[in-house]
Image (cartoon, rainbow, N blue to C red; front, side, top):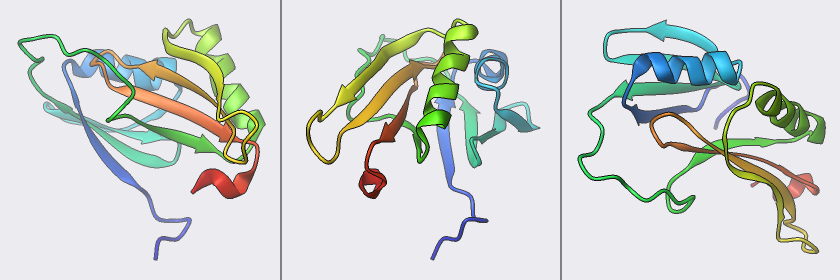
Length: 134
C-alpha cells in the first residue's frame, strides 16, 4: 500500500522542454529535479512529473478537460487559494477560472484549470468535505 513517503509518477508529452520548464518551475514554483536532452523531471507538489519531448501533432487538437487531465486535490483551502493567487500574480493563463462544481451536494468543490505550453490541462481543486477527496 502506498505510504506518504511514496511518490506518484506521471509522464506527459511536451513540445518544448524550455517552455515546459519555465511553466512548471518559473510560473508554478515547482522544483526541477532532473533534465536530459529528451525530458525533464519535476517535483510537482510532492509527486514526480516527467515531461517527455515529442513532436507536436500535425493537426490541432480541440482542448477539453475530459477525458484527459491531471492535477492536485488540496486538503486545505488555504493551499488551493495560495496556488490560485500565485497563478494570478504570475499572470498564468487560466483554461477555466475558479468555479464550484456540484454545489449543494456533498461532493461540492472549488476548481480551476491551467493549460501548459503543450496543451496539457492541469486541474487544481479543493473539496469542502475532505471525505470526497477519493
